[in-house]
Image (tube, rainbow, N blue to C red; front, side, top):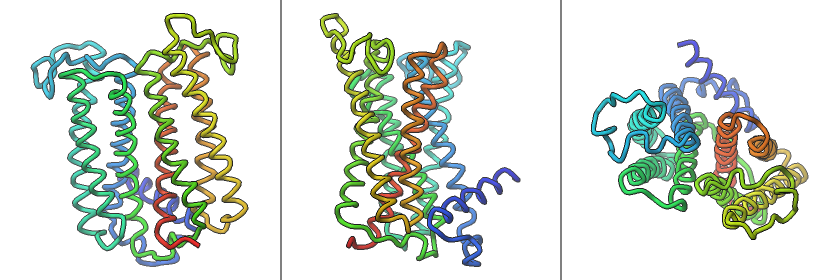
Length: 333
């Protein structure tokens, strides 16, 4: 119980400090939607676990841990197999099913309590649709199999699903605080931010595609690839090398785009804490993301940096989505 209270209190203060106010500024802030806030935090954490479990399934090669049966595991409600791959896949299925129920409850609850907020219905629909889409894609991959393109898309869908749930939770904290997110930006800034958001999603996809095409280790070393700026494409791994190098280039461009966003925000919109905090956070997170990705090539244990790689890009995308939500609330300059 203490942990739940602390988590809610900590989350509350993060949201308010990002927007330049303190919870004590409004006596009603801490009493409104208390249950919804707590449930939103629990669901957000649960969805993050779903995403990490999915990454774990992929990165440990456990996708076939329950055979080609779904929703049963080897035709059993509770599998008898104690193989590592079976435990990983089955726990992912079970937890995803539970979180699907939680997301549905959160969406209905938010629709009822926060329907007066402009973004609520859209995010509620997104949360439900994408958790269903995520589940159907996972089931389809088990039963019929999918090509690498579709499998890579599954991680992108999971990222959007988590972001929708997290933003619904943020709305519960922002409710009845009209001063929380009052920002005005230029049309150029708004277009740039949304362009970066779309591009970030494409970079997420290229990263997932690297894994699903077994292109992670085709380059030995960094920043060079096999001792060259442009690796030799004459081998049988030309396709994987191309995918790997495209992802490297795309990630480098993304870091540069975030740097521009940060500088632009500092120069023009530093008076808006939500934009200053957000642009700073995404730039720092992309550096952590890059460090985790690069370290995969040099460390003995692949799994820890790979999971950090997945976690940071998910949080980064969610923060960027929140910034996009905030700047659409008022007319641009």
